[in-house]
Length: 316
Image 1 (tube, rainbow, N blue to C red):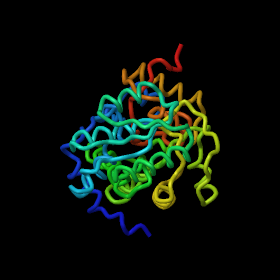
Image 2 (image 1 turned 90 degrees about the vertical axis):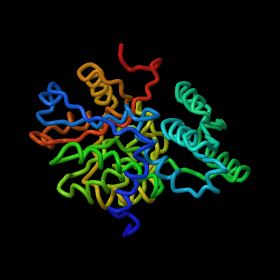
Image 3 (image 1 turned 180 degrees about the vertical axis):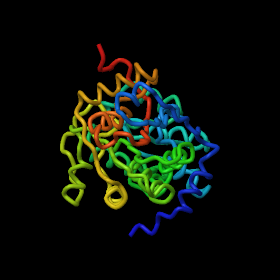
């Protein structure tokens, strides 16, 4: 099962993308340690290029294309951080990026994609519309599709977050990653499996978009019809590859409410002075909700991104 994932491939990805990304810092916070009764280590991917971990997977995929494939450009569909990542790596490679975005994408994310030189193609806000529009562009341009998460190269690229974390902080009992489409969580689970086997990996998920929790419970992918959450980076449903990896290598999924996400977000802003997006606060929310599980443990928390729409903050 999943013989395509090997420790060598994870290490090669870390070397391959090293000069294209930031090695992000790990922060601690004594007041949050006190509050959670645990030792928390925050991996700060909101300081990453493009403002989120997504650049890692997009870069690992883009760099493995042949020069001929690259010349025809890169393409994807995404309403947010992955769109920015693909536009950014295309710019670094000096090739075109075609990004299909739903017409209701937040202005700040559209603006960022445009600033990175991405050609934006708007579509209706449904998965079907996105996929149809993307198929059209791939046909017209011959561009290479860089999927947002359900792709071996992308998953292995995202594993470098946890690889760096294990390098910086030894003896972590647990690591928690937010889960949407599952690229970050499956990459984190693989990194733990190969490089820190005693570390348990949990996914953290909003109750309004809890397809991963439902899927693991049912033993098959369970899409959420109309996901609703402030954590707009976590609306995607698991893919067949991410689901299989998470099912095999993660310990479980922890679900949190909107109130719990907003509370955790506020704590990170106020106590740590870190501007993270709601999706990044979901992991801390899961620790605070499940105190007994994490008490007296060394816990890695992945702060997945910081692309906040400042006009829509949940604080008053």
